[in-house]
Amino acid sequence: MTTRRTTLSAIIIAVLTLAGVVPATPASAASLVEVTGFGDNPGRMRMHVYVPDTRPAKPAIVVAMHGCGGSGPGFYSGSEFASLADRHGFIVIYPSAQQEAGFGKCFDTWSDAAKRRGGGSDPVSIVSMVTHVRQRHGGDPDRVFATGSSSGGMMTNEMLALYPDVFKAGAAFMGVPFHCFANAADYPPGSSRCTGGGGLNRTPQEWGNLVRQAYPGYTGPRPKMQLWHGTADTLVPYSLLQEEVEQWTDVFGLSQTPTSTDTPRTGWNRSRYSNQVEAYSIQGAGHSLPSSGMAAAALEFFGIIGGGDPNPPTPGTCAVKATVNAWNNGLTANLAITNTGTAAINGWSLAFTLAGGQTITSGWNAAYSPSTGQVTARNAGHNATIPPGRSVDIGFQAVHTGNAAAPSSFTLNGTACSTG
Image: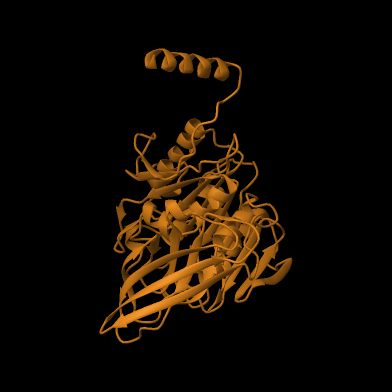
């Protein structure tokens, strides 16, 4: 009887599929998956992909790239792109660089191969990842985007310069202009002409020519660019933000004078150059971007979030109560996150700031990254949804050097929470 029912079910599914009807399947929890054999891979890179359970027939694709010493899985855990993918139905590719460059493994933005379209190295590997996702998951070729932090922000500039026909927009956090590094010896650490001192200074036309020479003869549309930098960044000098602005405004033939300026959030000073380039100066921020809410701003620039997140927790719709139990040089902290709004929160990331000298050693009911400073806790599979009026409890154990204060400055999915 069991065999007969199984065969009958298979026949029914086949008939429905031929008729264009896809039968419902049980819901499953999306997870980060490593992909091997994804195509031409001269950079010998590793590829991880996050495919949300709910997505349109032709989902957008976002390539999200880590900083030096990081990894794809680390950027998945430490940024908000995956939780936003759950909310908005796009696919995220997380490449892992394999090139050693003094700061650990970094994306190759210095070699001759990496500066020529089709030249090889990491850019070719990343395009192979995009092609794989388009073929395997039906990704929309007209909605492919790049973003990244530090080394990943530098590679974002690379990908938009080399493959303007693949990427429609980019958001570079703490990056440098395309073709800033002369060679491997010029890459940090050391005496880099690009990032040493105040940073390399070229004219807008010189910067723009480098982009135009990367793909000679290309006359199609150029991807628009969003640029982010902290004013207190000393590792990748803040002055390089202006060099990036000069490069991309020249590529678009725009004036160096912004068409508008505003402050979308406290400390976020934005300059817009028509609708093709925008630059964010983050007041007082060091080499620590993206922080809470910036991923959503990038997705709005891409057009994945149309005119803002359609389902955000609005101000005042979350509350966090922190309880700390401390001893000698250790402590435990319990965080009760309450949805005080009227709509369910589906998928969440809680950003907060640890007191100085504290380092998380373990945690429960969430994934925590990084372990010091500004930390992001991402939901576990069993507590991803917070119904209105309900709470979830998470916590961690940490060591401290004398300051056992509770964490502060809580934001849930980019929105500030009340405390009590």
